[in-house]
Length: 288
Length: 131
Image (cartoon, rainbow over all chains, first blue to last red; front, side, top):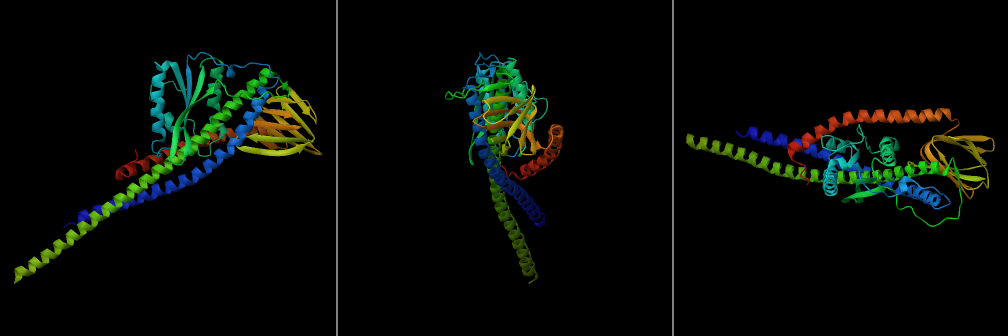
């Protein structure tokens, strides 16, 4: 009797359907989160621009102080900041980043003493914890969907402090840049030293309180923090887009499997019926 | 009248007009009135007090700066809170920070569990064939 087999297939169909429901729900959740993340990202741009304009206006005025954060120096040690996600199930979102980062670093450095990394996001922390690299943050730094400044500020401040103390000589950020829903590129952007703040000469001549040096000490870290926050918002949009695509693929694959299994199920059922009929007919013929 | 804009990474906090603006930073208080010379003040931590008619409003700031020129004040702050007094605000901001970090930790544990389950399920049916 083929009852056992048909029941197995039926169970499998049901399990697959249930999973595809979950992946489908996740796809839709990601789609709506992506919309929101895109909106936040776009709303952030004018803010960053206004901060940037203000700072470049101040720098190009009568401010007569130099600052370490504005000067290039020989690179002996590099600080990397890798922005990963908290949650997995986003296709190659994190793995592609790890791979790219690894190949770039191997090209650039001879040994792991030449760089340190700061990691944002749960996944990256879990990945690099077991690797032969120096991690700056002792704990996981979460990059939640509603990411806030508070979460990231300590690590960024630590990296800036290290830069000022000349423990590291440049800071490079790795993240997934959002191009559109189906395309996210891994990019590496150098944020320290700052070298793109030149603007026109402004005629405003400012007073600086408490002192020009102290103003710069506050101003430049704020700028860096804001730039990084912008990268994170961008990475967040990429994450949702990647997850949306991955979950759509999973749903489609599940549907395919359900179709295939349904076919098998029907075939097995038909085989059972045919066998029964054959038995009855055979039995009847034997009685004659 | 002076125009004042306060922005934080979360967006614009507010936009207001005031008669006198009093800034408090590490050095002490400083007042800005109309037609003051352009000035840049670092605030970490401190507050900006707005005086308008009989009303006073405190904007408590952690990590930020103020730029004044042409009777427009631009305040850029990493964390800011508006209120009628200053002492509570600083404490409130610190509380918020602590709360947030605690919550993050809690969520991590819950989510890792749920995620592992779903991953297991997907693996069982080979549904995820994403390269």
